[in-house]
Image (cartoon, rainbow, N blue to C red; front, side, top):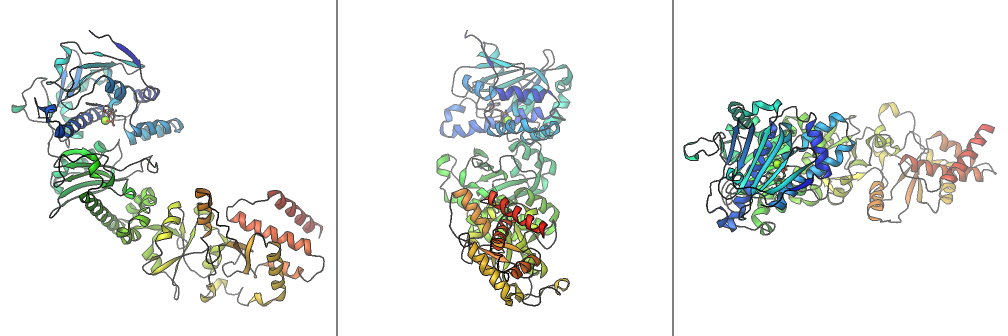
Amino acid sequence: MAKEEKLNFGADVSRLLDIVAHALYSNRDVFLRELISNASDACDKLRYEAIAKPELIQDNADFNIRVFKDTTDRTLNIIDNGIGMNHDELVENLGTIAKSGTAALMEKIDGAAGTDKVSLIGQFGVGFYASFMVADKVTVISRKAGEDKTWLWESDGKTGFTVREAKGKESKILPGTRGTAVMLHINNDASDYLIDDKLKHVISTYSDHINFPIYLGEPDGNEEDEQPVNAVTALWMRPKEEITAEQHKEFFQHIGFGVDEPLMTAHWRVEGKMEYTSLLYVPTMRPMDLYDPSRRHSVRLYVKRVFITDDCEGLIYPWLRFLRGVVDSEDLPLNISREMLQHNPMIDKIRSGIAKRVLGDLNKMAENEPDKFGAFWGQFGAVLKEGLYDAFEHRDALLKAARFYSTHEDGALTSLSDYASRMKDGQETIYYLSGEKLDTLKNSPQLEGFKARGIEVLFFTDTIDDFWLQTVLDYDGKPFQSVTKGNIDLDRFEKEKSEEKQGDKDETQDSNLEALKKIIADTLEEEVGEVRFSKRLTDSPVCLIAGDNEVDLRMERVLRINQQYDSGAKRVLEINPGHALIKRLAQLTEGAAADTELSDAAWLLLDQARIIQGEPIPDPSGFARRMSRFMERGLAA
Ligand code: ADP
Ligand code: MG
């Protein structure tokens, strides 16, 4: 007989088990959901492999899951005739955390506080290790389909586990020549899981949607005269009206991780030239790895109820990667290789159909349940907007769904059509201001003239905004225009009453101001392309603007940081002729000895504009020197 190997858990597993042991789930029942879910996955995997290798299931093609208790030795057994695991797979799958989701979770968990830990884990689920919430020892006996050795894995869930070949009698627990038996040695606090009524209740609550029959009772029961505890029909094939919210929730948790709930459910069947059924969910919470570049969508592809893959690349647009659920095609060939799927025109059509339907439903939600839609947008809006630059066909629906903060109402999101309805007479463009932080944007000097005239400006705060703006030039024929770029003639619009008294005479005729403008332009010749009188400023003395033909200020910053691209374009410095400081400086141009004073002022104004913009100043010590000189003079006067 082969000897026993003693191995330690991977470091992550030890930590995870520690957390599991200490008040993880308020609801312990979920361990059974996790184990049945694994058994169902194992059957799915083998059913798929058997399409190419039918000999794998020759002796028994009826997949099933059996759950039975043994009150004499206090074990609860969950047995499947799925794909099984060999020695190395037992060590790898049950001894380390291979799953990327759980690995990512473990990374986050270190930083999180106590209660957050629980909610983090809830979001991911802990799978197999949930067993140790109810068992003080777990034995797994498994034989991989097509192989001839049966293995026994065992652990008390503390430091490590053992693996050895199963002895004669032990392997009898498996039905036939393949599959996995998970034997839980139920601890004293969990004796209720040795009662059939309790088990029946838990299975029908959490696992009703499982596609394979789940039998409860005798270990060697004869399936023919037995009734499964679950309904067995695939959930997505059942009539829409017959599926309860609770069932959707359980199914969603089965295919995703943990305890989140679906925010939106889309269940529909396409018939005609192409036939498929989709059952898709928008989660309530954003998964931790939504922005991880390696993250794929989590929609499973089935062909006629047979699970094919959960990694079909072209099935879902990357900007809908938060969707979870199932697509079941009637037309794709069952023996299609996973590689062939990627370039299959049928998959392209399904992808497009899904996008159309989901966007349609989201836009309906926006209309009928604006608060719920707002919650959705907060979680997934930035991802959805990625579609604006790569999915021309869905652009209108995406623009309709898009929401932005704006100067109209603090803290409220607005749609583009609502913006358009508030546009002023003669306003042809949609004004926006783009930057990282909403709070900084709200106080930007570039907005002053717009606010004074009651012209609404949208705030674009996601990096993705600067990218889609390169391809989406307008909404409903109205071009997007950055307020930090080019010459915007705001004088066409009247100022609102309270502002009227100031600024109605044109100060720019003043010859001192002209002289000041020239001095500033000469001093800053190397730094700015042009100095001009501003129409956008009311309260601030200066601001920076991108030239008419340049990219907008933020885009330039994004390009410089991300692509090491420097356009070399010079900015425009706008000065506010109505501002007291500018007026005073203009007077100084008459005096003879004001040269250093005015050149100091020019540099200080430029640096000030940079600071407000959230940009570093290139020469901080020069800035400090000038600032001191200026303060000194001010105090001496
Ligand atoms: P997950 O199911 O999310 O991958 P689990 O912790 O539940 O994570 O399971 C870890 C891995 O162990 C599974 O991915 C699978 O490879 C393997 N496994 C667990 N249970 C079974 C089973 N009954 N049959 C075959 N493999 C299994
Ligand atoms: Mg699992």
